[in-house]
Image (cartoon, rainbow, N blue to C red; front, side, top):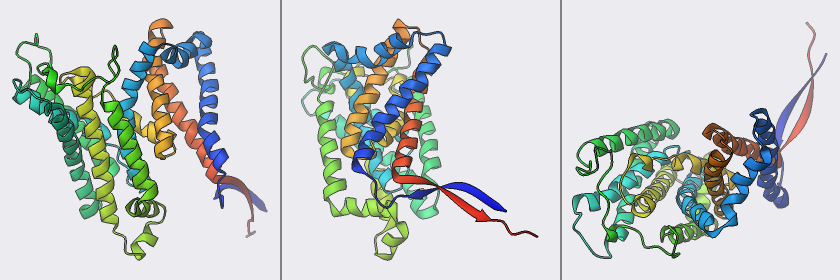
Length: 361
């Protein structure tokens, strides 16, 4: 009896043109799928897509908000992508983001009378250190105890959320804040300088672009980055060549933690201007979508972070103008990632029908 099944077989080489078209195809398929969803919900798809994809870029004021949302996504995703390419899956960027915000806020909270141009750079540096320190625990557990960094980083995020809540209802609570769980407002020198007059876009955007360039150089032009990439593709081969898997884990998690902590510091020192519970707004999880949608490539991540930022602002617009529920906005983001992963899988693999013969008893 002949039996047939289908399996994925890796292609010997993937077309660069097809790889570039994969995210575009994924976006078009996502639009079609959500078009059907919006009709089923009784919404006007044209109005929803206009509010979600067009409104954020038609005026400078709305596009400046896109750039503001893009900044933390770009910072975090670039750091995560380095680990992902080394097969070190850091799911805890949200917790590292929160710790970066906490470490950065410690300066204006403890010394609110301090002045000088050194404060906001020190806050950014301290935030990056805080995020990296929060990544030390999963790195140690992975290297020494072979624990899954996926689970450990995720659990560390839950701890970070509770630590933030404790500080904001306890020792760091603003006594003049009408009982809201928030810190004192930061002094002017503890906020990031604006780079575009009339908007909230600050120096963190420049920092994110410089960070992107640094990640590109590190991954594409440095020997250490090459070792991380090869280690992710063939860990046994790298071990045979004398490359340390443990060192790759430490480097990947510390870089990802530093980037997330830096983004957290930029958020509290930028548009928020104080430490609040709302700082934990899901950037760390959205950055995972950004990293994979950008193909784990620094240049691709630059464009995918812009797209997800547009969806952030556009989703808010759609909720107001078309009464679209927040769940539908998240479905759009999630389906975009699923469609991209399906598209990139077909770029790297081909579906082959395998026929086997079943021996008769």
